[in-house]
Length: 363
Ligand code: NHO
Image 1: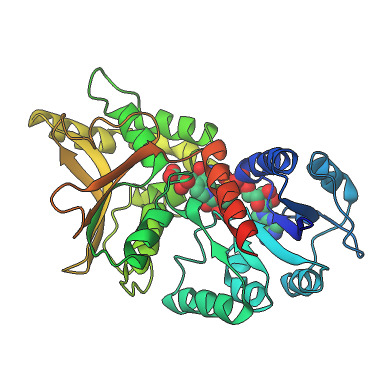
Image 2: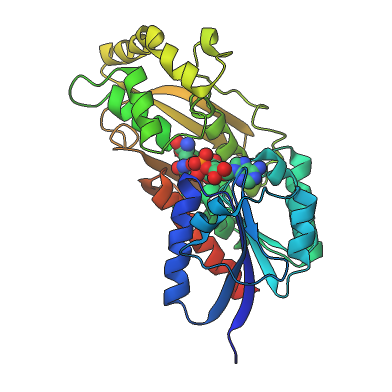
């Protein structure tokens, strides 16, 4: 049989998007069974596409887009353009745009599949969550978002396997934020002094672990979004990421800082507050870490700082590692534990590329 033809649209070419493009190039050169052609690529203020859907060379796409001088069309125009493409279409959303996330139902209803690390859609209102999956059903399209929790780690796929094979999830807990993991491991290490809180935050941003605005990590919202997604997959109709208790690490005085950069500049003035949490835990032989949990029986979701014994797997994490324990009926008293790097362009893009391959074989 001739290879399947699929059109691909990529929106967002930042930290994750640019790595995704290079992985896409590798896949194109090393996977023979499917021929896909890039027909649309865009960032916030630039876009490249041709009215006749002619193929855009992947290796030079970003450069060509930057030189193109075209601004991206409105979202409805993008949807119409892609819906009229000669082949089935997969849109890869590598932005953190709420507007794009909220328009997934329009894409999906018109048969355009979605692959994305963007958490906004799946942790938005419960209504949007329902709309996304019913639109996919009516449009015969697919929607994959592995990297919305734990970057490239198999968290969403494992969660779906529990649900679709009749296991019952009773509790999920762990460290869900690469940024928080990095910050606490650097500032309150098991051995040694540890660095200043504000210095660790700056470093985490430089390393590409944080969300585009680091306050989205420090206010706990990133973890809350991930728990919302997992809780919904497990069957809890969680209304929104602010419908359960979430401890913010943003000093109230800096909540209204104008920009992420302004916030980072003023943060050192508040280092002593985080230092107090660290010393209080140390006095009783524990370390402080930032964790989240979902208890299915009581329907309780919570996110915040807790103290751990130095031997606890959560206390011994390294770098930006995530650790997630799934307690289920099948796994009994020994949870299934998944641990690994949970943030950064390379591993996040891998989750996106892996999803793309899964969608490609099903179209
Ligand atoms: P950037 O680098 O800001 O890039 C965003 C791109 O989108 C830019 O090219 C921008 O021009 C474009 N863009 C924005 N709005 C647009 C619009 N309306 N139209 C067209 N283009 C638009 O952001 P990242 O870092 O590349 O992130 C991209 C997406 O991946 C975000 O949704 C982010 O939440 C998601 N993501 C990133 C990471 C990561 O490590 N960087 C992770 C997961 C998902 O697993 C990671 C994670 O959870 C990180 C988290 N902070 C943690 O655990 O600490």
